[in-house]
Length: 431
Image (cartoon, rainbow, N blue to C red; front, top):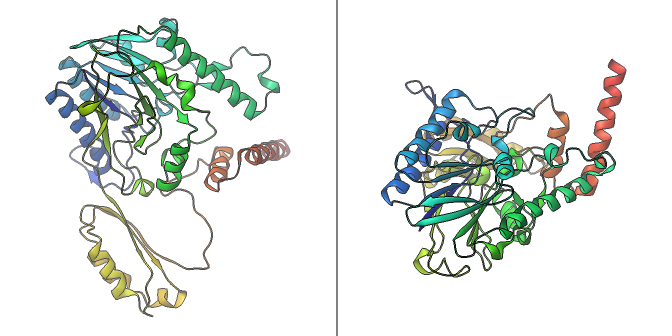
């Protein structure tokens, strides 16, 4: 039984793209669709038994009709090939307002053949049981943990108003752990089982991966979100844990294979140099739980076509840094890449730098984000590249800044509360 696992498609990211008038979208949009096409082509060609999508189909919570059409076109190809496809709801798939349908709900409403949706409604309908999906090689149990909707998890609770943010998060994590445990307890041990989650795990390898590779999911998710430990996912009950949310491809395997598939396409320079694609692995249904994945069937990343992000960083020694910068650009192989050039130099060197010469060498780049001179005395830290704070939500932008500066949670909570009080006071004065 061959399975494909992918996540964080984020159709709708247009940053650093060129217009494609004949299609009505940008080259960056096409990059994401090309990666998705590679996955669909592979799944059909290799006759995979199931495709597990671990959440975040789109960048926006309310995607355009064009974005929805392009996602649906590729899901339809999988459906027509009779490949069961499980669609888990991520944080970017949820509506902006309570009561509205999420963007993946339409597949259940229309009864699209061979397509299954993992959300709060499916969990409620199944009374906490995992969904059983028929495949060419027999039934596959799929337990799920969609992105938690805090308002629903804590609805009708009289004690919520007196809880601190930390207490609320601890309660949410407890409830999520119960959801997984309830599904795990109802598994048939004789059938292969997968758990798919869109969640942030509070594990050393995840934190290290984010620090080392600057995971873009950290800034694409504004505001606080609960985290869980891998041990909360009942790992011994499943043959594979398919994770989504973090954009880095991360192996959290101990005894049970457990992977973040990572995003299908780099979103910004924080993902520069990362391999992008989807996971594939094989399950032997004839073997007992714990021994169904191994040998040649071990999980592996299948790379998809990905646009390169290239940072050309130069620390010139000469008073005129132009020649050194140009040489660095020529070495960097910038053709068809999204490029930024950072020249770490003094103000005197910056005054002598002839940018037009460097720009001529960058004409074959797909997109030039910037050429900038960075002076040693410039210590101010910036928000993630390409991020524009929502001016109508200053608390969210402030919270992002706190996390970018790695301010510890207890202090962040105090500062957030002070900011809320200050805004309320100013708003009251103005009113």
